[in-house]
Amino acid sequence: MTDITTFLLDDHRHCDDLFAAVEQAVSALDWPRAGTAFANLHSAMEQHFVAEESILFPAFEAKTGMSRGPTEVMRVEHVQMRELLNAALQSLQAKDDEDYAGNAETLLIMMQQHNMKEEHVLYPMCDDHLAEQSGALLQSMGQTLSQAVGYRA
Image (cartoon, rainbow, N blue to C red):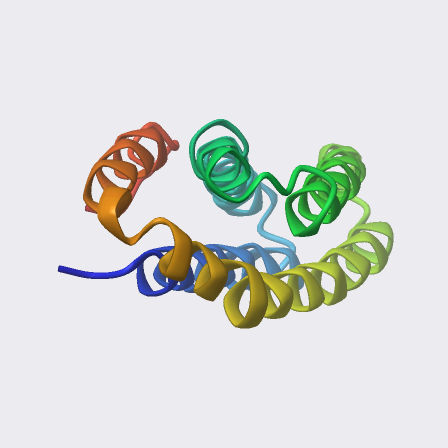
C-alpha cells in the first residue's frame, strides 16, 4: 500500500505536468488548447486542495490537536494559489500571454515552495500520525481527486 506522502506527491507531479501543458500552449499562442489545459490544471489543483482541506487536514488536526500549525499555513497558501489561478485565468481569457506569464511565474514559485513544505514536513507527519487510518484517507482523497476535469486514471 502507498503512503500519504507518495500518494499526494504523485498528485503534485500530475499538477506540475498539467501546468507545463498550459505553458506550452500559451507559448504557442494556441488559446483553445491553453484554455482546455488550464481547465484541467485548475480543476486538478482545486480537487487537490479540497482533498487536503476536507479530508487530510481535519484528520491530522483531530489526531494531533494541532489546528494552528502546518495545516493553517497550507490553507492560507491554498487561498493565495486560488487567487493566482483566477488571475491567470483572466489573462488567458484576455489572450494576454505576457500577463499570463507573470501570473504563472508567481504561481509556479508558490506551488514549488508550498509543495516542498508539504512533501518534506506535513505529509511525513501525516504518515506518522495517521498510519492506522491511511487506507481510508487515501480512498477518500482518491475519490475527491477523481472528480477533477480530465482526471488521469
